[in-house]
Length: 540
Image (cartoon, rainbow, N blue to C red; front, side):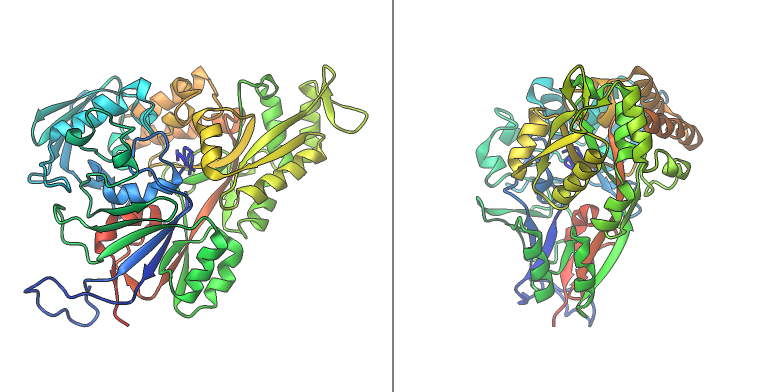
């Protein structure tokens, strides 16, 4: 969801649709030879619909799904997801780890400039982490990802060192995940609340920079002439606010959208009917969950959480809402992480309403005169806040029906997306909610489950468990792949029993791609946008 941690976190984790607007092409740079047939050409505009106004700062507490794609384009990180999903060079061209694993040194690219022409240096990296990420009072987005980082030191203008409080084998992967570097010379006075930056024309290092921000309508990006890499092919990238998924599908079918993530899997057959569009599905590092607020004593009993999982027909949700594009989830480690995923847990807690009723009875909940379970004279009734985005509303309705069958009343409270984020994710003012997480292509999920992140960060339920903390720390400090596999097998088994979140399903991403858009790497679009400089539009 968002976030992430997908995805809030990912967590929470994320939807974007990309549209190619205007078939016109512009000439290649002056003096460039004519491109052979089928070679990349310069020119054209790509439009990316988003669900709400973005916040153009990767560390702002208000930057969630609607901000993800544009921030990944604007703000380079030290690393980025490689085309094999392993961390690849970005602002850092190489890195090394000390013998004890408690210090990482990154060698930065030379000659990098910000979009305003000012030089980029190690001071910007140190500022981003020391003065924003590691300041607990600022509440930076994704701060919990870097709880193992003690400090960041600018060794010289092109060298930066991360000193850790414990081994953190996934550091390079987390630096590739929504961890863009921001400019010290612009944000030093007010790093997270500068409105002319967050909702205006920020200074950035990516292949494109902001041309214009029109609230409620769009954000237009143009080439960043100061970019350190090759000149991007597209003239312009426009993010337009289009919250309605049906409108996005209609635009794809009409030829206005050239690439998109299809959230409404019911539309797959409609999209496949177009000869100009291809539909591709792929596994994701993402999972949907039901969070039960652990400040509510009704949900601290593991029997209640186990009962809810058995009461919810997760396979039916996958079939009816995802149209089969997914599989039942029982932990935070997804099938996309093939080296770590344990398929033996897929049959744990199958749909079984009678078993759910028995567990609820063991937890002290007995049927009342109207069939609603009660305890100490109070009915088992609560409110589920529902973000109005994608498939969340129909999913909540199905869960509501399933819980009713076992005597539990869940009242649904639909909310506009930004209002939902503020209430549930920022303020933690909720009882139960459904959402998702996406996270880096690494099994380290410490930021989403550690007790230290309860009530803040990505630990949305506020779950605290010293044994789980210990397992997650072992995973972060494991020395080799074999050790990590063994630890994360234990993590999955323990999560499946204790259910810090109620794991619902692992979705597959369905991408829709027009024949006119070329150069998009074979990645999920969330990662492919970080290669947008390679995208180009074929002449028709």
